[in-house]
Length: 193
Length: 172
Image (cartoon, rainbow over the protein chains, first blue to last red):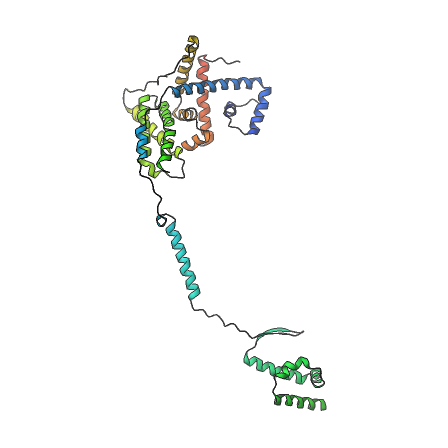
């Protein structure tokens, strides 16, 4: 390590260095006589200067200044502004009221929301899935469809005819007597042909 | 800030500002007047004091402005050169050491008076006001490096002065 700069030495004496730097300088000082002497010189200069300043301060009394501090004592107390007069209150109030009005407009405006339909039904066969709304017209169609299905399906017809038809009870419950009779007649006709 | 806190701050800073004025203006009476004027300015402008700035920083800025203003005004007045501030030092009893000490202090006084205004303000704030370098940098609105280099050159001048007059022996 080369010799220490004078301004670094002054920083060292004024305790203005990081501990890492301080250690490095202390290590250098322990092995470099030149820098040690330089440091001693600066120490001397600083201590003489400090002594001089101390004497100087002691021997120059502060001029009387009671009249100055008295003025400050009579200074009107600065009171805290009431809450509505503080600088941040007005913009904050404006923002809140704008937001409030916007929300009210949003909630109170008439909206064309589709009515919630309760009668939804999911048809979930193995082959396809469909969500349908069970409007009256559709229910009619469904009934016809079931009848058609039963009518066209030999296996179903067999189930209905020979007992294993509790699964279709619901469908059959919805048929009135005449329709049921018609269905049965048709089935019989079919089985005959 | 209430008036009690304010008074405390003024009490704490009055002496420091006075010393700053004394060293910068080199004259007791001028320094006395300047300090009074500075604190009257502080009083008049206390409402414009921004809370985010430190009170002491604010006072020092007002003080330095006023001191430089006074210095300029005074230097324009013809035939009025400020005399070097007389050191009022209580001497030690030992006559030989008294002589030596007196010489030493006169030399120091001269060295301090020969500093440039920038070096001097840093020196005074460091030694008379005992402010850390960071604070001095804040007051002067300069970088820490600039303040430290002002301080270093000031100290170098003082050291050279002492050395040239053989007032302190340094081992070679």
